[in-house]
Image 1 (cartoon, one colour):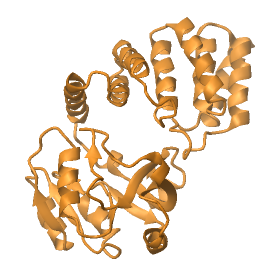
Image 2 (image 1 turned 90 degrees about the vertical axis):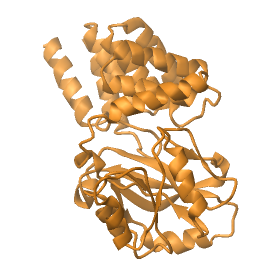
Image 3 (image 1 turned 180 degrees about the vertical axis):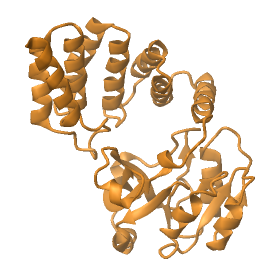
Image 4 (image 1 turned 60 degrees about the vertical axis):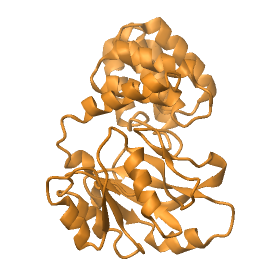
Length: 321
């Protein structure tokens, strides 16, 4: 775990894993509150690492200090809510598996998790090895090839959206991403996340430009981030009233991801915006037939195959009446 000024959440996070970990390592990047003392009260080994606008650096400091055979990556605003009983089986397997993707859910608490639309998979449990280190200064990932990764039953709840008051998060992220792209201007992965930051700021022209550059430099067409990036790219064009390019983008995307409901939802919005409500009615109806995307397959807005589509359908039917 890496942490800075997380006194409001770190106790909750560590409480969820204190009974299953052989060691707890917390790398502190400059806390001025009681984060470090709270971590120490759980028996954590607390290391100091100066913040350098690079999330991988302190994570790698933690990896180098670890002595156990397996690493569980937990953020200070997350807790393990399911799957503890599977840990020994997962880590005792002799097959050629280097890491596991766990289920991630964003919600206020475990009770609300069942209804949360925000679910996805992330690589959080992996073997300790000298050649496995984190890469990328932000949205960091361990250096493990996809063929060595499996999915598992562990589930982590991210409750940080409900306790985080850091108003400078987006500014920090933009700074890190821009610095990274100065060093590696053809990094598709970093361009994608820069686009996401611009979307958060509702700067749609810059978001569209970043997504376009990400596609230009894309080396792996099967990368997990491609489908949601195409959706967000089309959504940025929609807000820019660039309807024709958005429709062309979606038409191509749907040939590759025909079961990704989010793409149809954006298509329906585009059709409605242009007054083509009969087509929009068919498209939103298609969303309802498909249902919400499998969150373990696609990053989704949630509701694109249910309540969002129902609202869109209601709006176009009113327009047609």
